[in-house]
Image (cartoon, rainbow, N blue to C red; front, side, top):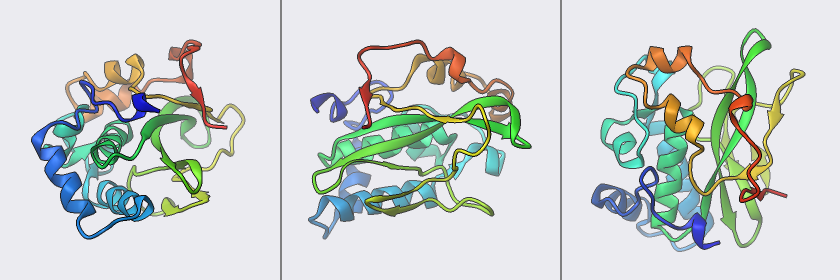
Length: 200
C-alpha cells in the first residue's frame, strides 16, 4: 500500500502548495470518506478540464494543475491523487478505454482515480468535471463515474497504477490542449505490466 502514498515527479504532493491545499480541504474533517469527498469535489468542480474550456497550458504535474487550475482528465487525476496522499489516504490512477466521438472508433484512454477507504476497499472516482451528460459523484460503495462502458471496444482497465503510465506523460508533454486532443493515447500504448495491481 505504501506505493499509493509515495510522492513522485508527477504526483508531487510534497510541494508546499499541494500540502497547503490538502490541509485546507481537510480542515475540520476527521473521516477519510469526508476528506476524500472534499478533495474530489474540489478537483472535479474547481479545476477546469482543458478541452471543455479550451485552456492552455497543458499540465501534468499535480502542482502545475493546481497552480494553473486546468488539466486534462489525466492531469486532474494526478492532482486528486496528490491531495489524497498528502492527507495520508492511499490513492492510485485508473484508465478506461472510450470512444472519442459518435460512439465508434477511434478510441482513447480516459484517466480517473481509485482511493482506498478502509470501510469499502478500493473505490473508483472520476474528477474530470461534470457537464451536460456527465455527472460523476462520490457515493461509496456505488460508483458513479463520468462515462459508462457502452460501445464494443470500450473497456474498464482493471489495474490501479501507483504512478502515471509513460504514454500519458508523453501525451501531456505536447504544447497545447489542441495537440493533446489530436494525439490522445489509446489502449494499444499500454503493454502488460505485472507490477500493476488489480482493482478486484
